[in-house]
Image (cartoon, rainbow over all chains, first blue to last red; front, side):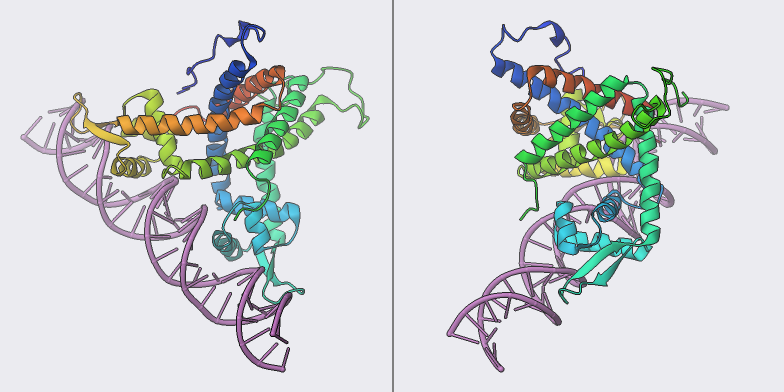
Length: 173
Length: 173
DNA sequence: TAGTTTAGTTGGTACTAGCAACGTAAATGA
DNA sequence: TCATTTACGTTGCTAGTACCAACTAAACTA
């Protein structure tokens, strides 16, 4: 089951002053890699299962979420937000249109372009899914003290920032 | 376990400045949901790009990693570890065999079964990818103090544990 | 031994994802 | 103005992801 017996379990008692900070950093990087790996996998599969219960794929749900949060977007904008090729984004939107969760409307500023917009039904569905996933998160947080919850938030945001800065914040080629 | 497990932490007031812990929990859950969402997405896409540079898909890399960490596994065992259907796992293994990163050997204990095992080449490839991803993590951590790095690790592990407990720790049907 | 269960593969379907090649519309330039 | 270039989105192609269901073969069981 749990395969994080990898290493770094007895690391609590070591002291930074005895080790060059580079080695500590290496060890922490390894540990963080493994820890994040696990976290990401668990969440990925959890989300997939949850979302599938609503007849949406994860990508579709992510697209819907992006549209709900950001308002109407062009295809290219949606693709950039999702780190996807525009062709893939186009097909994801196709699926959402077919299911009635978004629609394409003409962009008054450019007749080539279309704005993609969640429908009322789509917005409601997203809120339902979000509530469901948040309830999961809530249950998870119940085991932590308020202070730890707060610290977790800060740290996760910092990690995201750091990763974001490193691997390209915006749209990709 | 029911909700409100840690209420009555401090004096509850009806003021929005001093929320009852249940409401704090709701708000933290929402915030954590969004923060984790972002973290997971950034990492997901980063990993995909990195791994693709080595002519491996993410699933293939995950399978290889599982086999390197756990040693030879049967198909069913690998599928369980990856939360996948055995048919999907079978095809992932096919791809890895085609590329020479794993091979199937007969299981002496059961002639129906095959043990899947990384080849020397596969193990080397995984170590290369791992080193690459860890280097990414290391660069990310450089902006954090050692204390924060430690705290991040602890928290991520706890969140993983909590998620794991909640959404089924082991293999799925 | 016959019937059942288990291990893994294969067929079928749908989604994900990127690249390349379109058609159309806008922007640019001579 | 008209031709070229650039941009927006769709579609064809290929490969990978993922499930269910049907199948073969081996192992267990009655």
